[in-house]
Image 1 (cartoon, rainbow over the protein chains, first blue to last red):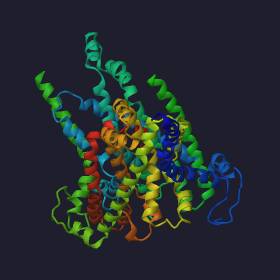
Image 2: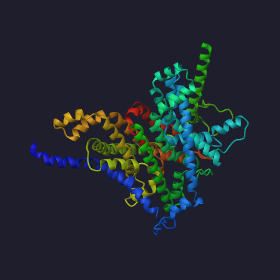
Image 3: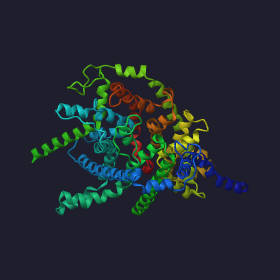
Amino acid sequence: MKGSDPMDKKKIRWMPYAYSAPSLILIALIVIFPILYTAYISLTNMNIYNWFDFKIIGLKNYKTALFMLDSGFLAALVRTIVWTISNMILQLFIAFGLASLLNNNSLKLKNLYKTILMFPWAMPGYVSILLWKTGMFNSRFGLLNQWLEKLGLQTQVWLSGDLSAFLSCMTVNLWLALPFMIMIMDGALQSVSKSYYEYADMNGANPLEKTLMITVPLIKPVIGPAVIITIFTTFKQFDVIFLLTQQAGAKTGADIHTVLTYAYENAFITNNYGFSSAISIIIFALLIVFTLATRKRLKEEVQ
Amino acid sequence: MKKRKITRKIILNIFFIMCCFIALLPILYAFSVSFNTSNSLVDSDFSFIPKDFTFKNYIAVIMDKPLLLWFKNSSILAVSTLVFSLGVAIPAAYAFSRHRFKGRKTILNTLILLNAFPAILSMFAIYRLLSPLGLINTKLGLVIVYIGTMAIFALWNLKGYFDTVPMGIEEAARIDGASDFIIAKSIMIPLAKPSIIVTAVMILIYVWNEYIYAITFLTGADNYTLAAGLYSLQATETSGNWPIFAAASLMVSLPVLIMFLFAQKHMVSGLTVGGMKG
């Protein structure tokens, strides 16, 4: 056995690379190559007119995106940030409220309610969005307009005005995202030991004090990672806005681009590839900064 | 005092019944419409229980639309993506969890950053990559895209779980002369079952629900996946058959619902790095 040691060592040194090679090669092809290629195209004037004879034009696309206000990118970026923040605030409050009520001891059917409330999470996302689009918002088939009519009110074209389309998208996004947040909150609330509340009761604390002084600080580290994931998915949310308002051939007229739908439109609808690539790289840079910042925070909190 | 408690209880239950109703609303409506005879729902007293109960829409979806073909296409894509994804991810995750080698930490951290790039923004570049290889409008092309897109998630999620499996049994087996392959097959994979199941279900659901690559890369209704097909069946503001679309939607969702329920009990223990979702 001793004689074969050096060979084994050499073999062991190579093995991890061999094991991970197929996975890493696929990642290189499907993840890394597109990023590098996008970075390259972002420096060119590739568009529908310069499909083959595109040339390097330096940082012009970046300048257009970041400094020309009428390019639409900055507006989309601001809208995406508003979208992310408002969605997150609503999600956290509603999920906290619902989870707290669910944990009320007198609620016997808790598990049944919880299972039903998880339903929007289990459904395929794009199917739900399309069902909302036709079943709820559609001016002919939609339930909302049918109800309005029944009440004798003016029917609405829900997805065409900017504000009403934005709010409609937010409603659908909340409907889709709340189950996950409720589940996380529910788990977090159950992790808080009852003895803290008993101690607080003995000291005459009121419900608000109990929530602010005990519940919130104690569930914060538990829900932290889930909140950060949700911030990412909300910022990167494409399906809701795209499917509800921007499908090719079925645009509703609302201009509520977020950065992702804006990059998509510039690549696949107006075929402005150079510009779209520059936007993609800017979005990537923003997401990397955010990833690094949150990872550092999370690590500190764990220690 | 007791009366007040009961009132509170009733109000709480009514509140949650309403919440459940909202959570199910679009699905209930689609369900009822899918069993309804007519396309015109403009009649004023619509109810959630269909008045003229019929299977007509379901039969129409299966007979008149290539739904079964799309189902077959989606199944082929989902199963091949799953097999190859796990096939490449399990050895890689094992290597990153159990071996210490040069570049390990750097690669792991880089993967997290790379994952920040939204998959949808890669579509144009991937099109340029697959097009000269003749892989556009082929199942193989899409499978490669799907495996690559899920590779970082699969690797990180499995690696995270492998890390929690204690080394003890493995070391004992190694002293007995077991190879990596034997250890992975008879110790690691059985012990890491929850995370393998969750990873597998996430991959299946991802492929089943993916529509944007499918509608961009596939042409011709015969090649469509269920998601791309359903996308093409949509009812628009003024035209389209909403009952048929509703019936198709529910049929497409059913396998996902089953998979989700099946995986649900493993969901919490099997997801180690939720951060990789999406």
